[in-house]
Amino acid sequence: MKIIIRVSLITALVISHLITESAWGVDTVRTNVPSPTRTKDNVEFRIGPSYGDAPELTLRDGVPRGWIHEFIMDSKDSVLYPGIAKKLPPPVPYQRKVCVYVPKQYVAGTPAPFIIAQDGLSYTNVLPKILDNMIHDGRLPIMIAIFINSGGGDAQGSERGLEYDTVSEKYAGFIESEVLPRIAKSYNLTFTTDPEGRATMGGSSGGAAAFTMGWFRPDLYRRILTYSGTYVNQQSPVNPVSPQGAWGYHAYFIPASERKPLRVWLEVSENDNGSKLDEASLHNWVMANQRMASVLQAKGYSYRYVFAEGAGHTDGRVTRQTLPDALAWLWDGYPVK
Image (tube, rainbow, N blue to C red):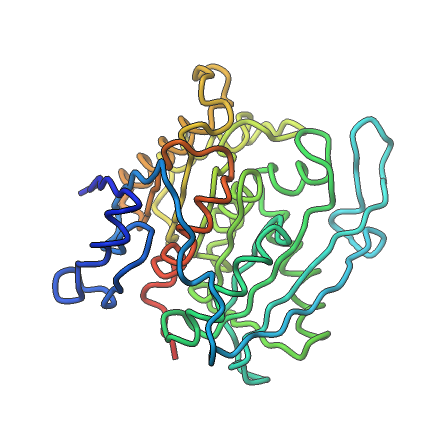
């Protein structure tokens, strides 16, 4: 059964998280958080139009702070993505920045759960603080975060578009074969091979990429978090197997497939990209995300859907308010210790 809840900022600040373990069979939830109440699966929230930063974004005394490592990946070293750009013959050289967050509590040699953030450097001012606080409080596992940028550009014909909007397992293979081994070797880290301990997230096309990773490789990734996910037809070049690009997920892939072991948190904003376009455009982000929520519900997936009133595409206000509770819900059921 689907439940729709309207949550204002004031309401969330005062009465959020009143539902406890005895009522829903989930972790006891906390109070005084300006974000959707954490309850059972298949709940859809309407939030806004006022927003406030979640308290987990504030650094607290006595909370261990994780390490941040940075490095550059050069296109000449990539087998899968040698480089493209609009109106230029390939290969087109590029560099991508990568940051790695390692919590202070991590013990070398321990297989660690982790989350991959597409367009990753846009989250480095937010996610490390959240992880510091929530790991310290025992609300998230001791997990590594990988912030990886695309190869650059945007939309059709760009390296970013090729990586993020292609509906195939190629990008997941890139992370598995070219990114994780380099990080593990460089920083003496061990990543869990348990797909339940592997999450992926992103906004816009980065969100579509996150879902694609889980859809094609549920043996590798099962926890997915997206903001303003580009579940529209941005794919280039056209793939006859998925002629509508990521629009095909809600149009036919999910409805026609057996349910996969995925847990999906997704958000869209009232004023998101293409919000006034019709269905024939295949480019209405609001329609696409609403349909994603509907087909996930119909197929019995564990999902959480948030509609942000008065907000825009990948709105930072929404991210700063909702990300802590989104992560808590996303990792529900995974051992914290």
